[in-house]
Length: 158
Ligand code: FES
Ligand code: FES
Image 1 (cartoon, rainbow, N blue to C red):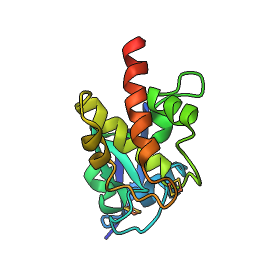
Image 2: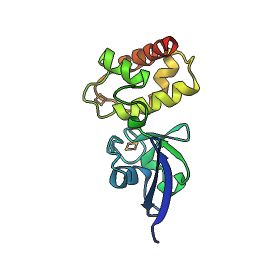
Image 3: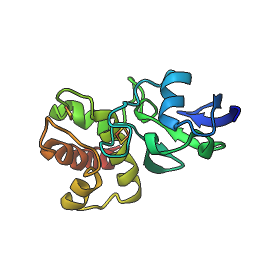
């Protein structure tokens, strides 16, 4: 079957991309929109490295067909903040040294930011649960939760 045009708002910019009917959002973002900040891991929904926010909800882009996102707003880790104005979560991750090898971090930040936007008062265990689908082989998750809590304090101060 032929390719279709998919129009999305990607990190605040309207983009039109060609996608085959069975092509994943992960592939289209990385290969056709230069969004290589979206990481490719297992490509079967197990690791969360490919997570992006689609219309406010964190999804695994390897399990999402690009054509399903036509008209959607898609946010990657690059769209959470800017170098001048990082997202409070990004600032907290840097301050606490929450990243080690970094491969999981784009997905972790995306998942946490979508979760905290919906549940700003979540408990530590709920925050921990919110990143359970993001596999990290380095950190033990403690600093992710610490950073998420610190980011809420920072947000409150803004
Ligand atoms: Fe999508 Fe692993 S690459 S969940
Ligand atoms: Fe290395 Fe998470 S920081 S996998």
